[in-house]
Image (cartoon, rainbow, N blue to C red):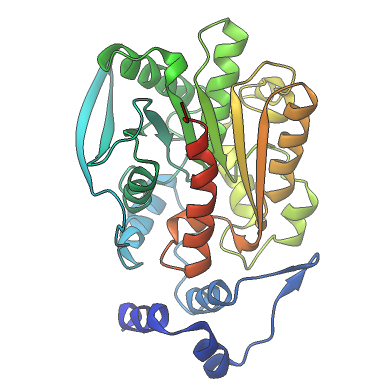
Length: 338
């Protein structure tokens, strides 16, 4: 029944939704929440909440895994995409990395993608539909990494995995690291920035660029947007606090620029595109990170979508979410112009 209701919901024009639901606009900090997103959040609030922070991470993953197919699959209007999985072996570590290839490729520079999920949940499967759309629109080969999750593998395990994957792509596909772009959403955006920072600190070859989609940057979770959007907008402040607790192993990490990104602004970084959403607890810390790295002389583009929520790239069946995703992809694509 829920899937049928959602199917009908996505087919209805916005003006029909407004007549049927008769809900008032949600206005916060001068920003108006997209109406279709607003109704989806209301529908989701009627379902049982499977995100119980008293349960173990493993139990939560099992519960949430079924949600990856809860939204309709998106149809590609551009390049069609094929994919295949590879396995990376190193130091008793076995990682899966999925390669997405468009049938029409406009540049040779690949992208290494890191999925979101607070470093605790999420897989290459939960982001599969989004990666299909990103690959089709970018017309570039994209690799999506299944990095190790917390709390079983705390910081810096995922960073080690990310660096391993970057160098594997460079060696296997005969590209210098400087030709490979990094991209990710939420925790994945943190991982992309963490990897760029790590390589800068170590004097290693820098990646081509990085696209950070609503990045988590500040383990204090104390920003104004964290408080303004603490509940009711998909991602909650309590969930973010819990994610950081699962990821962190010691207080020393809070001073590590690869962990606390707000400490990382002094290091040279590749050209950066930062995406933030208005109704997102992470909005202010993403903007703060953008200000800091720009003030340090790094090349930066920042695009803000005031009407959207955290996680919108995984909700591109919503009209506004898809429009925003395709919009920032246009900017990201210019990074590879010859």
